[in-house]
Amino acid sequence: MHHLLKRHPDYHDLAVAAFRKGNRFGVTLPDQRTNDIFRWIEWCVMERMPVSFCERPLVRKNVKMDPISAETLQKYLDLVYLH
Image (cartoon, rainbow, N blue to C red):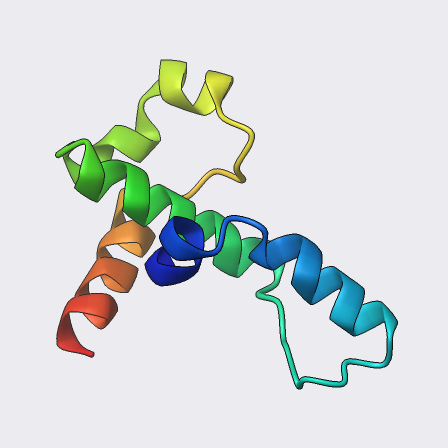
């Protein structure tokens, strides 16, 4: 995902266009929940925030992503690390 975001900023538009044309390239887009989890991980890791950051009331009030618990975020961080 990082590679796509960094090297191919238009990947989402290309993927949507491919999907509309019958998905000729076998491109799949992550669902919204997967995308939200990735964005929570990215934010916490890149900004060096504690996992509990996602539970702060002010953070939850001001994000567009669905809320996530610190326990769930830690679970996915561990899965990424172990992969």
